[in-house]
Length: 295
Length: 151
Image (cartoon, rainbow over all chains, first blue to last red; front, side, top):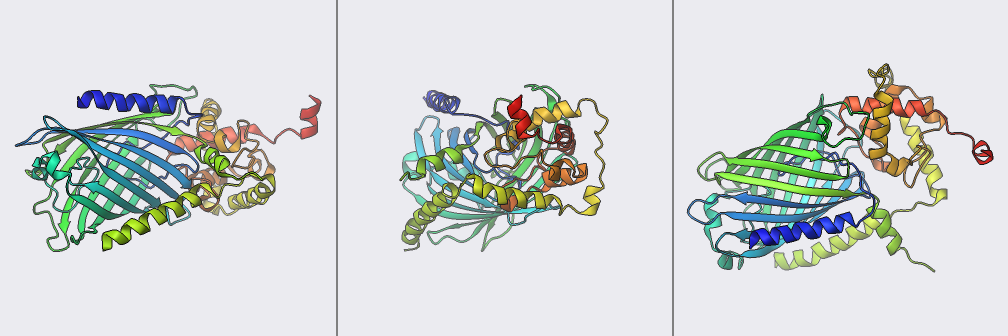
């Protein structure tokens, strides 16, 4: 059933994006969890569907899925809206919540290390399994609760990240530090993500091509929790390492895949993430025209 | 109580952001001219060290063709198909750009003009930015409008 629903969702996404106007050849990073300092180009909208399969010891494996709508509001501000859901094998498929994320670039120019400030509001339930970040004392055993019970818990959370990213000789290195606050009287929780990636070729070819090495970006990311305000550190936290691969097609589509591996006993042993996205150029102009009043 | 406050503040912030994100765009010609002038001024801010950089792909026979492909994919949306100016970006076929050192154009591609709408393009590897410089410099000044009309 969950495969049918996933296929249906992807089909809707494909139909929606194919029917939209111009696309741009995207140069998207291949990360799933880490962020670099590059924001969406102003006025462009990127629509993406992501999926994460995870193994579960002592319970049923799951498949989480989420949709992203990423919009370049200005050259220094990107805003993003998410819809999250998950299917747990032998249990059910449920909608788990929404997230609204904003990234700001405070500096005007490019530096050796480029900071980006990240602010996110999450309104989700306790059955959320997208594992988009590692934070606090999140561990594999948290996912054993049946969906019908877990979804009763409502979570309103603010999340802040400091993204420090650098590009050198084609390589991107990024480090994200996370602080999250559940507004329901929970302590501040912390986490991290690290990433490194590089295109397979640095020069572009003279002809538009699909399989040219410059269209592929490969790398690795690592992420996990760092405890909370009262118990800061690695004790009772989960950590993952994941090779990542992104394929930027000239048609404006980007495909990403990443097998992830748990690094300790608190982590899911295996995660498989994949995603497909498409960038729509000039989306902001279309909306502005629609909103503009005519005398 | 805190959650209740958040449920009021977050939608207000979202509405404000929506207005800020979609309500500012103004593509009228009268507003674009001063903006173009200030964008051209940015290129004069390139540091001497950046200006003095030579294009390592100057003699690469494929650089212009590769730059043309990159331009169509990344830049034409704003600067127009022929780089003569578009919906959001100014013409690149004016003397301010065509007479600029390749290093200065490379610098502006790398740093963008973030506060004025041009994104940072350092996400493109250095060789691709130089390929773009090669293409932009190969364009030369735009043909005069009268000549274009006559032809």
